[in-house]
Length: 74
Image (cartoon, rainbow, N blue to C red; front, side, top):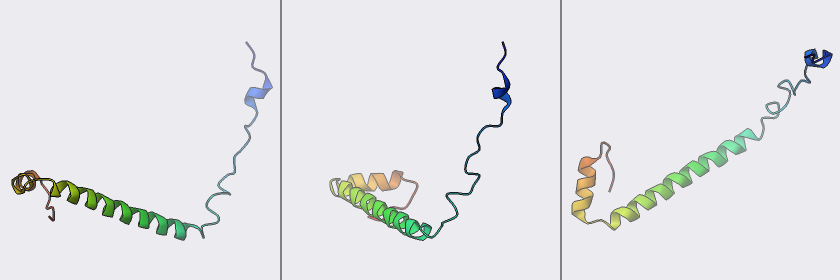
């Protein structure tokens, strides 16, 4: 079975690294957006945990804090 000469031709090249990283001016604003999103996620997570802790009895909170490996601010 012969595949012919087309099998051995060089494939068409891509952009060769000429695109994507040449214009990095927008990266600063992207970093700001990412940092803001991280802060918002941390704040939202903190609110969820605090709401869940409010629903627990003090004895349940003490048990959770004793069993955890990390310090949790209540």
